[in-house]
Length: 63
Image (cartoon, rainbow, N blue to C red):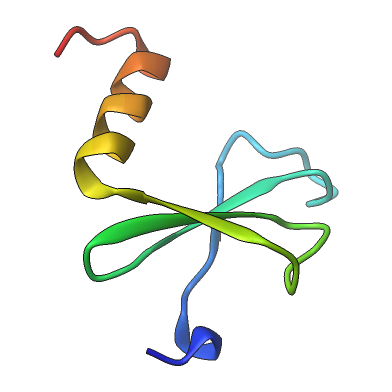
């Protein structure tokens, strides 16, 4: 997959200026995360199960 084809999404909780945000992108088998201030900078990806567990923990949901 060409990295230019990835659709990055900012959280709806991001401020109006759009800076200092974390962006995520769904990939075929994982979720990628990057700093919106550095779109060409480093990215980290998490397996689908790990990402689901992480988001659930943020929401206070028990797995």
